[in-house]
Length: 353
Length: 257
Image 1 (cartoon, rainbow over the protein chains, first blue to last red):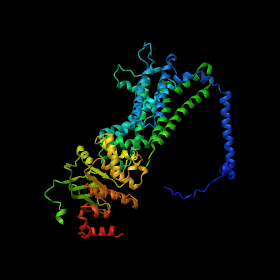
Image 2: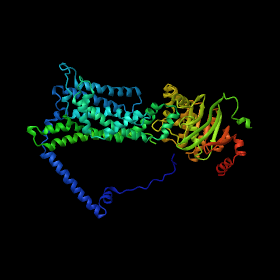
Image 3: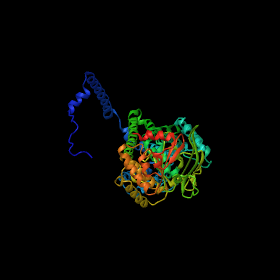
Image 4: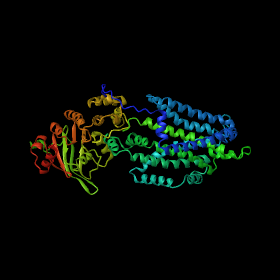
């Protein structure tokens, strides 16, 4: 502990606002010049944007079509089902946040279970039952669109590709040559082709592998493509994280008697995944934005809906407003993801070596 | 005197480790060239020798962190072979302490100790925690249970590593240069724990250059050079009357300062 009689403090530095300005922005003379020029440029740009946003932009194209942006061609009478799905997610997220520090293991276990169950529940909610079910008639996946479709593609894509990616990473480091070769071929093939071609392939090839009486909706086939694509990248990220776990950790795990599976689950993966949170979240952010590519197989996600909206007769030519709005929505989602990632890193970084 | 250290005694019943003609190659490099070593229950064996002499590799073969390519290693009646069941059985009976500690940085101190008993021995959590607390007490860090390994000093980390190994209630403990990565003022606290462990009757093989420790508790000291045992003896004989030139040279090098 520190010596209570040692009262020496570090020297205080006081410069104040003006001093700081002078030191950092206005000396020597060329810094002053740079400051003035940059300030002028910033003011010019911000003024132009604000003037456009508040005076010349015709935001009615957005406000009128708000529902279209959110759920697209999803029947308006059934919109409550989307809202209910959203409510489930919000409530679960809120509970997870509230109990994030809870020592109470049962509560956390229930929450994890609830998250897992929420996926099929939301799926049923959105899709409905039979054609003429009075309560929840079927809404074909073909009409899901807008932000709803973007979120479904991204969330299901992320949730499904993560475990597959981890398994692929484990497989690629396997000692069994068959598993190792298969995983390597898969990963390198997928990483070697653009997402667009994977999407086309999943549309055209998938039906060939399925029995003829099963017909997957376009959305489902796109989801398969996105998941397969993302899993390959997740696998490589996770593999990198595993390579960064020191050899001594593997040896210590063996020395205390853990078998291969327990060693991976309890010792290697927790450290490996924490190492690669930034990389994986970065990749999931990219995946979120890449969902816009499904427009090439005829699906109207947020950006596609935006394009469709600009074609409305009464709003012709209002591209700027529409794309600005779409960009803001994308930014909010991606920002939330990277914000969450930083929080997660901090929360897991306790006791870092 | 010689009869006490005689390896060819007829009663092999209480020999818990039996290594015969153990050879190992790293690529074409012949690291172990026919090592014979027997350990009886409760004995403390110290292995010393210059770096690169194969002493670490040898003890890592005993719990199969390295694979030997010729010869036999039998631990508590189980032969160490490629059979995974044998390997796991042997690894459960042997605790190991590493030079670099190799603690699990993502787990709290207490969880480092309880992990293997809970998952491998299938103990209940309460039972594992109770025994872990006793062990942390034994190695002198009971107040650190809720911290992470990275928050402990080097000496505390190594004592935690000893507690983690003991939690599996091993019959044998291997120490691979346990004090070599420590600051000088922390070596004693680790050696004290090891001396206490030796006196409690634990079978131990210790690779170390701490000759004070060897004099105090070792039953035999083995001197390794070039992948084989040059000589071995009781500590008193080993230090007073080394037979081989290489041993004399090594001892003069490590004991002069």
